[in-house]
Image (spheres, rainbow, N blue to C red):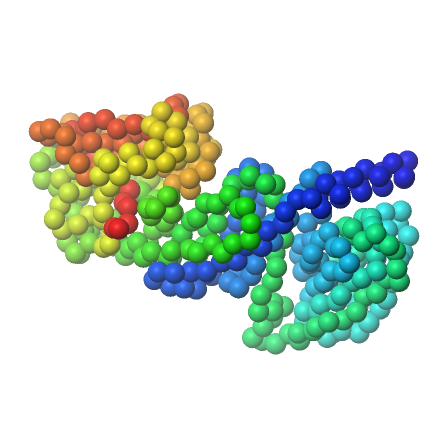
Length: 417
């Protein structure tokens, strides 16, 4: 039985050795070059990881054995699988005796030692392990780490574990060195979403890795007249807001008129409102509703450096995701936290995170919150009508239709280019 198990593990290991592992680094440009933190989401498998500025993402292509990620809290092994040697890195929270042990698949110890280490981050070179699966354990007075290590080395030799570096803890460096390699399971063809937050800036990049590369985040400032900062996402060659606009002021600081009563009906002057006149409930995440006169005001409703998209720019976005008959499922926020069930087809693989803010009709009533997302374009159609963009909870499309300029609709903005 043990022999069969070992043969199966070795088979998967050989398959894995034929897969390509990728190293992904990160850089920033635009209003800041500091990357800050990066949340990585594998949209196919659901795996996630978070790294900090200077860290490198190691995508481990796993075939069959999907639990061999070398990242176990403060214990890391790279590369894993190892060919002839790997680097074992771990953090010790205090000074004291630390035990390093390695056992094979049967539980037999192949290496065991104890050494005194100071509090800090330590790296050891591991070599001499023959082909197979091993269990690595690091333990001290009040901590214990463990992980798995696959070796592809053909010959069993004397197992050696030798210290290569140590960084003592200080108030400045804590338990983190200048950079780290963070492992994440990956299968070729998976789509990843990277979201970086750096101070007031937040930006999203979607990617299907095919090799080692550097992801560059364009930290585009997106601050409205009220000082609200918006996350942004790069789609094709354009950068879009990820939230619905919720400003009560134009970009020049002039207030947008708030109209909550019967004065809304067929209004020909600029106006905004909150759904059901309830800003506490609907400000976040659905944003405000604006009539088209406010959208196209010379005062500038969009944040400086941004604009309300034209009908053609909205068409370019939907075309990027296969056309208006299918683009909605890739643009809508996934799930039913904000969308009414079933939110048909929604995957949000774009990162656009379309939200259903409903609308206020030109005669005054509110309708369709959680069921429809309806956004203005800046393109006029005919007298008292302009183009709007619509997505629904029970459909996969994202289409444009003409709408009364007195309707109150949501707004998304696109960066000037």
